[in-house]
Image (cartoon, rainbow, N blue to C red; front, side, top):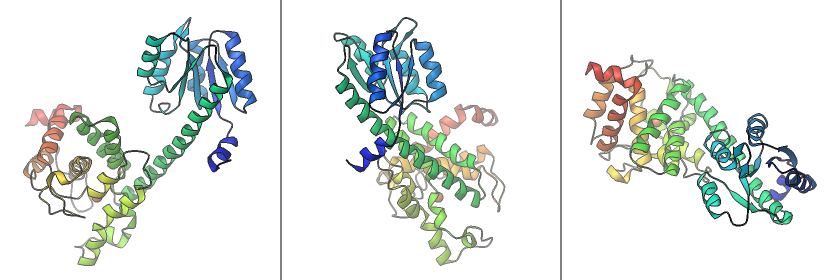
Length: 334
Ligand SMILES: [Fe+2]
C-alpha cells in the first residue's frame, strides 16, 4: 500500500449518486458503501442540486437524462461554481450515446460509466478521481494558507487585503484581454495575490524605516521577489505563480531586479502584475504620501511605458480601467 493509498483509506469520501431509477441507485449504493464510501442518493436532478449545495460531496455520479433535469447541465453548473469546480463528476450513460458524451465532456465531465455498468470498473474510476480530488484539496488549502500569509505581509506593509485582490483581479482582466490561456490566467491571478509574499523575509525595522534605506537595507528589500519565489515554488501543480512573483520588479528597459531582464525576456505574467501593482500602490494612501488620483496614476503609467513597464500592457490596462465602472468618472474628467 502506498502512502497515498493509506491516506485514501482513512478518508471516508462522500459520494452523491443521482439517478431516477431506483435499481441503479441501490446497486451503486451497495457497491460504494461496500468499498467504504459514504453515499447520499437523489432520485431527481433538483434534489441532487440541493443536496450538492448543502453537503458538498467529494464526487458526483450523475445520470444524464433524469425526468426533471439534465445531468449535463448540472455538471456545467458544478464546474462553473468556484467552490465546486474541482469536484469530479462521473456520468452514467447508455452505450450508444456519443452525442451525449461529447456534450458532457464539453460541460467538464471527468469520466463516463456505461450502463449496465461493471462495478469493478466503476470503483476503480471512483478511486482514481477521489485520489486526485484529495490532492487538489491539499493544494487548495495550500492556496488558502499562502493567501493568509500574504495578507499578513500586506498588513505589515500598511496595505489592506483589498490591495492583493485588486492587483489579482485587474491582472486577470488584462491577461484575459491579452488572450492568455486559462492556465496562464490562473498563474497571473496567483502571481497577483502572492507577488510580495517574500517581504516576510524583510525585517520590520527596514520595512517601517521612516528615513531613506541604506545600501544593506535596500539589498534586503530587493531580495523579496526571490524569497517569495522560493515560497511558491512547490505549487508546481499549477502553471505556478513563480514567474510573476520572481520578476514583478523587473523593468522593461532592463534596469529592474532581481535579474535585470529586459522587454519580452520578462515573463508576461510579471509584466502584467507589475503594472497592476504599481497602479494600486500609486492610488493607495501610504505612510509617506497620499494616494494619487486615478487619472494622475494612469498618466504616470503612460509616462513610464518603455522604461518601467511594457507599453502594450499599459495600453490594455488603461483601456480596461477607463472602460470599467470605477474608471468611468476618470474618463469623464479627462
Ligand atoms: Fe514587490
